[in-house]
Image 1 (tube, rainbow, N blue to C red):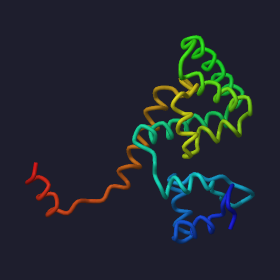
Image 2: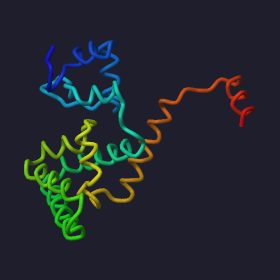
Image 3: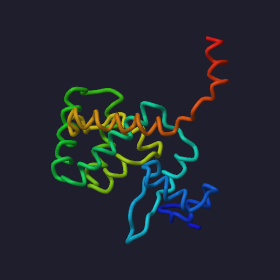
Image 4: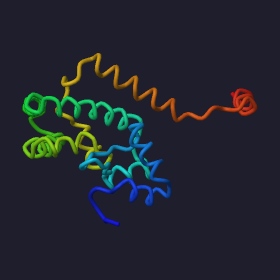
Length: 178
């Protein structure tokens, strides 16, 4: 088994101690990001580890979903989205001529200069560096308000999908203590 990079669904299943079909289901439901290499799914080790040890709070998860939507627009219009990101980056530098944000703005500039693949990684990864980087995202305005609303509604629906029904007895106990 490889120690870094992309994993097959079979390798991911071994690490998750689950079946390959379960890993494919996680991918298809959007709970485990993947890329296609040839006809096969490949999963980044960082995304698998983030699934095993979730470290994303509600705000970080919301940001991840919104940035995944930005990634979709980036794939459709690389030049336009990269130009918008670089333009916003310059605007943020003018608005904050000094301060702690510059470290992150410098990092975004490096990512933007590396091109589409590096930007896609920063927008869609659950790895800690990407989570931190997205806090100072230069992609404001790339999504319309309607697109933002649609993404956030889909996120809310996906969270409901994970909710377990509460038994009537347990509900009574909870209500009794309130």
